[in-house]
Length: 457
Image (cartoon, rainbow, N blue to C red; front, side, top):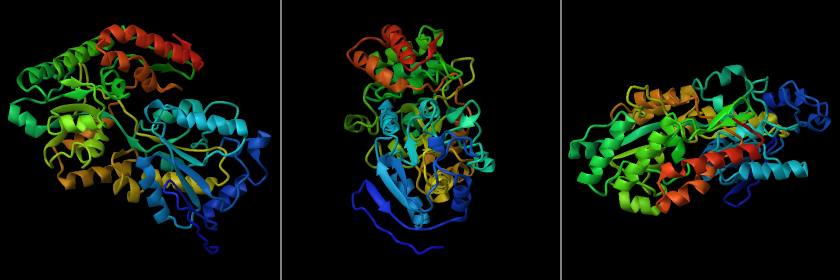
């Protein structure tokens, strides 16, 4: 191993550690593409994409959102000899489009791409895999060992797989469950609902008997993924790589919209963002139920700056079903890591990618959500159980939800969250019923699909 030299940039969001090291894996990867800049020549490496000329020991630039900074910190601690520069950005949260916008600018400049990017948007693979010189590196054509890819929970890589090619690795799984406060259920003498019909009935009862207590929120851009995806509403359907359809007049689309309207009118379903200070102020100790992703565990209930629930009071129920149907889960995020096909240090990028998705140091010890990598997920669930924070069948229900995500909801190139936020949220907040907004939502989704090159069916 060569001697180590390290320099640190003091800006909090941009830490640079330089060193010179040559690992065996790096040598192998360098040898694979030492014949010049394949990206410029248009040739294809043995990994299935046009790799850039590799530069041994070159610094990799990694983009993370604030929540994933601990992942980068853990990697740096475990791999102090790997040169890495960490930069923070918004992670594309709420469909901001920042990831795609920045990469498009680098494409036009022909330079400047980061080596590894975390995105909160699983649909980013739809655009990052396209074009003559796609940003995302192919992972399952020789770059990442198939044995490692096989370690992910079944179906976890579906959102980032295009035409049988894997373009990213999931950080965590984010199926929706029915969060509940057992202490409040006991206090009020209520039973945890298992169907959407029971959920609505309980919400109306809570509003009448215990005003001020709530059973959910539609105040965030991902509300459709909780309620419409979980209700099997065919609102965001992608067929192949170029067809999109949406049907807000489908009976299940209308039925879940009516439930939302009725509960908003009653006052037990609110329109505050769960991350807003108002939500914490008004509803701490008053959240009876909260359908939402598994990462609410750490983000809300175990967060001293959020709901900060008491140990032993919060449980994760199974996803809700329509009466007579099988329960399915929606999915909210569970972000993705991408490696750039332009990376000049694919060995280091791969080392980082595998660490942040599978290592105990990050996924088991630090990550707030259910890991997508099976071995890490098993350990994470054991750790949660040993903490005695959650009540009920926490681990079995999360495992069931993770394998129950409805496959009728697609991952288009655009953010349906952004369309909802622009088209539905303002009018819903002003008092228009969601049922009345469904046609406008459909039109907006179809227009966005056409702008992004889809054939709308």
